[in-house]
Length: 231
Picture 1 (tube, rainbow, N blue to C red):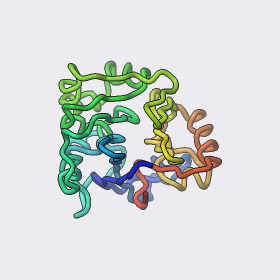
Picture 2 (picture 1 turned 90 degrees about the vertical axis):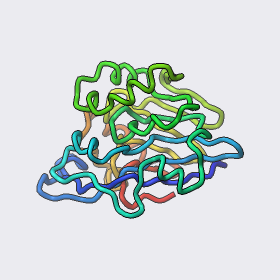
Picture 3 (picture 1 turned 180 degrees about the horizontal axis):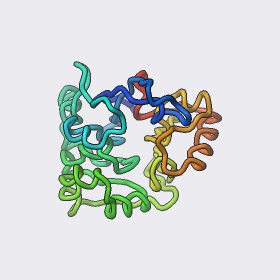
């Protein structure tokens, strides 16, 4: 069994039209932005790396409000420092997708292998969106790093990586110990409980299939943005 620690990196008041299909653009709900530390024996892994800079993250936001930090929210390195975990101990980073609020902290992990789907890697290299601009340090850092591409599904020890799509073409889930980390394929647990897709998704039909699958998942669904997420 892995010890899993939720690492809070920021929060924002997000329009419900972004969170839910048919949501009201004039109503906002607070969401967080999480990364996750996985520890088992001497192994230390991460799922995503959260927001490195809230100023840079605000260049990519979908809502009128800004990303900000409460007193218990820190950059990924600050989170790990507070736990006494040196960044050099992280040997694997599983990237659910390549948006700034999930990938921007990779620059601290010089000893890690990085995992993402082949589809997302292609998107990452060819992305012409604002994420390409703010992720410039990430591109530079990853140039000479070991990036392992997931084609469909991959087993990494007792961790399962699976291509999902929906939010982005190459979005990926990470499964371990009957916990399914779903990245941004849903934003919060209400998406799953009510079987309502996010409003912000590139592939709505795939998102609906995923919401239905997650609602029937026999273990725990873990989101990256539900403000009340717990491990």
